[in-house]
Length: 346
Image (cartoon, rainbow, N blue to C red; front, side, top):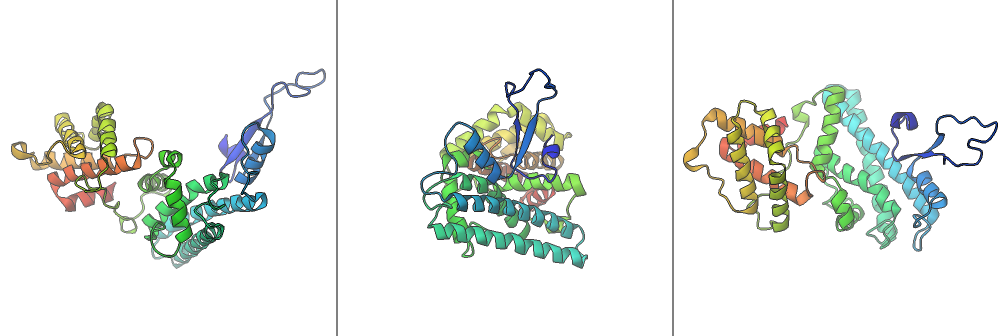
């Protein structure tokens, strides 16, 4: 149905169904067929429709918001979405055929378009005084940009090693990201960078097959369970989530390493949970595993670690703590070099 309503894949897209008691419905001479609807595409038209046709708080016509400028910004959000998709597709195509000069040029051009659009976004935020698009006023414009800037930050870091959150190139975007991440509602709903990348990578593999490993980056080091800046609440959340889904997580781990004994996987997961909350040593002591069991258990742990999704499973900081703990336990089994190899495979 979505493809029918939005053949080009544009989001947001809204289908508006006709009311059952609309004028003429069921009247003599009026044929009553399937429910009628109309489709509204794009953030500008959808926001305008909701504000003018539906009860509830205003979205665009608010004090401190220039209506015409807001519509321009909403259109810019759609441009950013398009260039982000273009950069991702071009990067994958270039990775699949590294000797194709035409594809390499197209990838570089797509990079320039995306970065140029982000410079426009950065300028808009800075000219308003920040940290939002209309200065201190948080608006539907900021909501419209939220998924695309977050995704751009993740994909540029992963594919191009461009860090939107640091450096001097995008100070307005950096201030905007910090302000958005300080909002509890956004923080609770946003995907973290690794989740964004894993979703995109899954789409690439289903569409074109695996991308050559040399074109991918190993996931950045996770937050260490021994970090002085650890968050006790995040650690407790991570351990609680693992305990609540314990049976399912063991089953998931055994999908990657069916030859591994369930009791071994269970013990390694318990070590990770203990390490997260600081209540159990990672050292294996006298019950050291043989090489085969250790390798299988490490592969299972990294398999689980790479399938933690934010916010589906837990918050970002909790995910970082649990990912780090699972890596640390795997490290005790096979060493850092093998853990890096397992991360690359995932």
